[in-house]
Every structure is written in structure tokens, then in C-alpha cells.
Image (tube, rainbow, N blue to C red):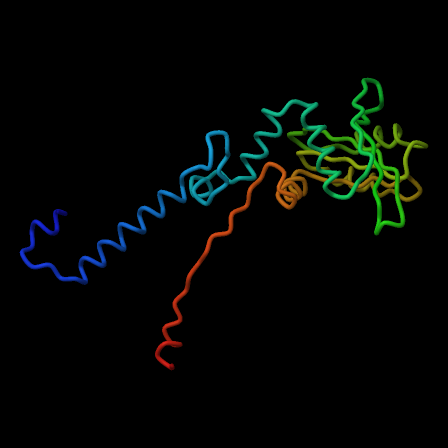
Length: 205
């Protein structure tokens, strides 16, 4: 018997129902917080309440735990999921910072040869880095793609879109995070069911 039952000689059925519902809610909360497996990173509201968002966890993982070659393979996988074909990681030393190449197809009719660079930056990418990358890609591709975990300075953004120069698309850490989430690459999104009682509907029936 529960402590409540031992104290009362007569039990109100409503108290029993209330106690059972509260116990069910507690059990559901504990089940929701239990991770799927030991190696999973739970990206939940609990982490956000503790001041640590899933974006912070991902940023730390990419910049501190993932080796440079693994980050290049992650970029390769992301580009393939985005519709690129023949994506290759080169990563050769002395290649002007070029990490790979691929072909971007537009609606199945047009295609562009793209050279990409992917760098794990903690800070901001400068205009000088964009100029160096452009110098390496001239004559080798139609477009350039620079992906980083960090951000780009205003000068770097201006340099990437400079008139008369081969165009370079920029993907910063926030955009990278959202793309990984969109394609489900290492990130699982769970939809939580929310049930709302329309009391007025029952009153008007």
C-alpha cells in the first residue's frame, strides 16, 4: 500500500486516479530523458535548460574532437547529400588550400565544376584566405566553395563577391550546422507530441 492509503481508512477513487496519472507522467518524463544508446548525443531541451545547446555541442565536436581529414570527409558527404556528383577529397599538401572538388548539377540540365575548401576555424576567416583560395582555383573550376565552422569577416564576404573575379560561395558555421541537421548527418530530430484539450468544443457539442 502507498503511504496515502495507510493514512486513510476510506479512499476516494478520484485520489487514486490522480495518483496514478502523476506516476504515469513521472515515468514518461524519465523514459523521454533516457538516451537511445551509449554513444548517442542527446540533443534535447534538457541540455538547453542547462545552458548548453545542441549547436554548442556540435561546434565543440567539430572543432575539438574531429580530425581535419574526418572533417573533409564530412564535407564530402554533405555535398553529395546536397546534390553534388563526383565529389572527391584531395587534401594534397601545397595545393593552395584546395581540399576537394565536385560537380554541382542544377535541375539536371546545367552543371558547374566546383572546388571547395573546408576549414575548422574558431574565429573569422579573413579576406586574405579568400584571395589565396581564389588564386588556387583560377582556371580549374567554375565556382569556389569555402566551408568553415567559424565565421567570415565583412571584408572576406566582400572579397568573395568581388566583380570580375571568379565567384566563391561561403558557408559559415551556422549554415553548416543547419545543413547537417537538414540532411540528418549525425543529428537526429525528434518530434514531440503535444495534446491540447479543447474544452469549449465539448461544452458546445
